[in-house]
Every structure is written in C-alpha cells, then in structure tokens.
Amino acid sequence: MKRYVLLDTAPIPNNGGALCLYEYGEDFVIKLESGKGGQLMNTRMHGSEDALGEIPCKKVASRKDARVLIGGLGMGFTLASALKHLGKNAIVEVAELVPGVIDWNRGALGARAGNPMDDPRVSVLNEDVAKILQAQANAYDVIMLDIDNGPEGLTHSANSWLYSFDGLAACARALRPKGILAIWSASADSQFSNRLRKAGFRAEEVRVYAHGNKGTRHTIWVCEVL
Image (tube, rainbow, N blue to C red):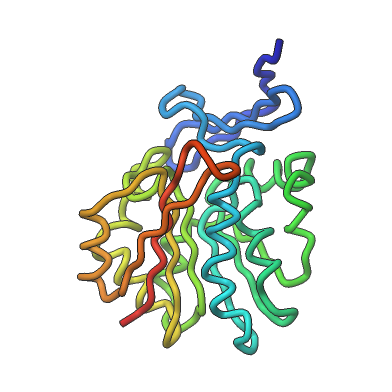
C-alpha cells in the first residue's frame, strides 16, 4: 500500500506557512503544511501545466529572441513545456518565491520534468513575480502565471494582488506589443474573465485535462493585449 513519506519542508516567506514535499509511491507530491487545499501538485497529473507552457509559447516561437517570464516554478513541467516550443535564442526567466522549491527542482523532483533548469536559456530568480512585473515595461513576449490555485490566493494572501485589476494592468504594461498573458487556474471563474477584459486583454478561457483525456479539467486563460 502506498503511503506519503515526508521528504522536506520549505517555509513560505513573509509568514506564509510552509510547503511539504512528499514521496508517494513512484510520484512526488507538494502540499501545504497546514493541510489546507489538499495536494497542490503532483508529478503524475501535469497535463494542464504542460498546456500552460505550450499554448502561449507556440504563438511566439517564431519571434526573434523571445523573452518569457514564468511566475511559479512548481514541479518544472510548465518550464519544460515552454522550452520545447521556444526558439534556441529565447530567454526564459522563472520567478519562484520559495527557496525550497528551487532546491527540490535541482534534485530528484527536477528529473521528473527533464531537469529544465539546466537549459542555458533559463534563469531562475528567488523573487516575488509581483515585484518583477511592477519593475518592468514592454519587456516580455509571454507572461505565464501559475501561482496558488489561480485567481484566489491560497498559499500566500499577497498573491491575490496578481489577479486584481492592478496586478493584471501591471502584466499588460510588462508585455511587448502582441504579448500574451497565460494564467493557470484549478477552476473556471466568469468574474475573472470580465476583469481581464477590463484590464486591457482579449481573453480566451481554455479547459484542459489535468491528466490524459478524461477526469479533472483545469482552466487556462490565454490573453492578448488589446
């Protein structure tokens, strides 16, 4: 019988609690230490994370020296997928708030995604993606956000700013002309779709399977600057 084996615990900065990495049979699982929200992610079900990397990066693959920002490293699957669909001269920055998550992706966890952090196109920043967005203008061809469970902050209340009108407006400013914002969410949210439009985006809500072609589906908003 499979059981959860705790491998490590990583504090979330600014009193945000902690993340726990477990081994569960042949898979790895990340949960909140508090138990709130159940599994945040696991290595068996990452189809929607793959889609988050693929959908926007395919759209900019032909752009010279495309520059991409990923908010949230997670288990590395979105990063790995993005790299597959970008050119050899692309620049990919990953902002990850929790230092422990970066360390986990340098070890056995990262191997499950093919060690995408080793790609020379990649730089991983131990930084709050919100601070990067506020400091940039006309900088990125693609911004991908996979923070918490989507528009409602779960692991860190400050993450809710990213999905506010001000946060989305900051994303719009940080994008280059015809730039794309892609946002992962565990569920659909019609109010958030309206907020995206008010912030200056033409938004498409795409439903994708978490694993295979049946079962749980997640939402990806694919947004172009108007």
